[in-house]
Length: 419
Image (cartoon, rainbow, N blue to C red; front, side, top):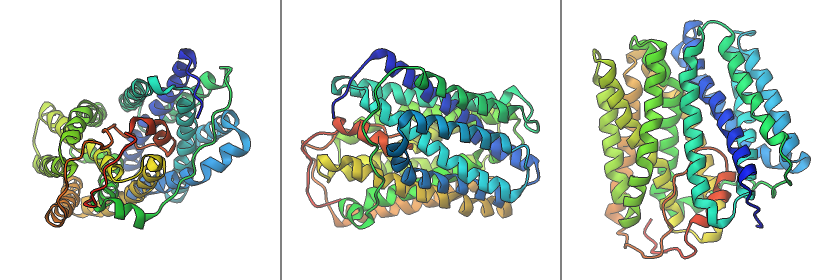
């Protein structure tokens, strides 16, 4: 691919990315709390989260042909306009079935919108700048997400103002890309899924992506509800959700670099166990101060968020360099399927057994993952290989980001047959 790096264009694309994540972070945090205030059951709130992730899967599939048909600028402008209209319908039509349908549609729209900006960013970046731009991209998305979460404090949950602010943020994201002269990027890669091939590359990594999807889908959907049921106010809940993201931002690189030096499974296992323990700690504390809860949240997020990137890196260690996009895109779909299942499995536990069972569920799933890693360590010893791909943090966005990352992965890959 021929890339054309211009600082102005990159800055414009990152600005659009930040705005779309501000809107998404605000919406993802605000909607479960608003649903609880409207009298929705915990189970129904779980289904709202599952509907979003199901829509995201659909968006990853239908996005590439749509973008090829109408171009990046038209696709982005049209999808964001639809997304803003959908968001504004939520306070107008407060009922279970409409909200489920609208949540599914927001998943489709967000997947396509993010796909456009990621493929555009990939096209505008030279190989020499790729690592630095990827790091900036991850920082921008995390800052946008945290800012959106904290933005929930700007208005009353029961009014329409927060929905309007979300719509404003996503609409403003159109202006930078629409008003900047630049050529159309290369076509977006199609989403593909070959579970047997992925499992052959690494059972640990493939199963891990699915299970991490389950716990993260449950957490991002039901985490705000956990805070409400524990008696925290809106500001405290948004702060708690924000420190989870901050923790993951701080630990991605140190944990990833450690995994480059050892068998990745020997890094995945203690991280998974420590995450499960921190989850049980969050589940067990009933009467605890805000600062103690924030410290636990920072630790839990710092341990949980890097696991997906470790799993993707582990699977790609056994794949040819030219299959990075295909393999990682397939793992993203597996993650998204898990994310669609997680909320509907965790919500009944919270409803019947208490708010803390969100983190008990997370710990149980991670316990299963730890058992899988121990099983594979017992049946397949892995040599430390000098030509493995390097670790890179992996956003849970669309398959376009993997095309962006692929030059970061070494051209030579180890194949020891012991995933």
